[in-house]
Image 1: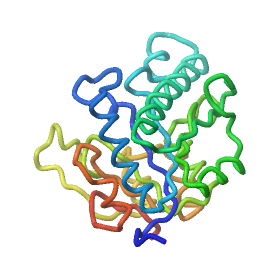
Image 2 (image 1 turned 45 degrees about the vertical axis):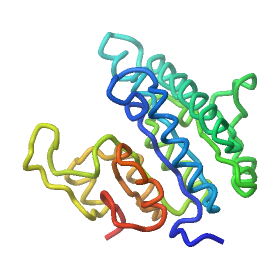
Image 3 (image 1 turned 90 degrees about the horizontal axis):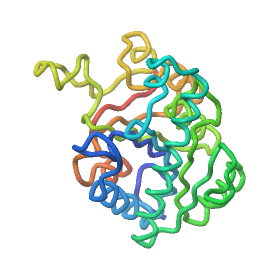
Image 4 (image 1 turned 180 degrees about the vertical axis):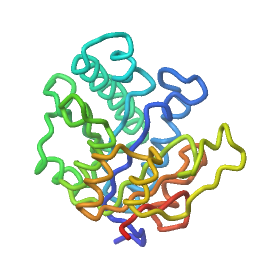
Length: 239
């Protein structure tokens, strides 16, 4: 057993986090650092599942802004998450972490199909599972995928790793007086339109009582701190 506060987690990584300061593509140093932190918590017995975004490669809204069909643009984004997932798998396995990628869009040559019971079995065996291709459906974000998978695998918490260190009442990059929330209720997050998650993802977490911790991925050691129950970032829960 481990002294971690959470035994089974969903780690939600934004695609932008993988790009680092480059803003596009995958920064090898960043992805290696993340892999090392994931290994650290896996080594103490925490069951880890990961959902990765694709903002470093493609966003569905980019395509629709160009006049592209929304569904087509969203599918392109899903494929971008597969690229990120394979890169993360490679980095994790270089750290000696047994890892499986499960894709919601079937592509057996590069990933397993998503099967809930198989995912649970991998987690029980100490393997890290990366959920790729979102939910497999257009019009749903990777945040919604994280909330859905968290409910399906009965995760204790969703750790949302972002480039900022928590949830603010304004953009901290533009407003130096922006205030960071230490705690939020789901309804506050929805009502104030804080943009942490889309409404569908937030509602899923609220209905299934899944807490969310929003924290900065750029600070080394933050993933373990969140898992161990240290007070970092913003904690989102029920009323």
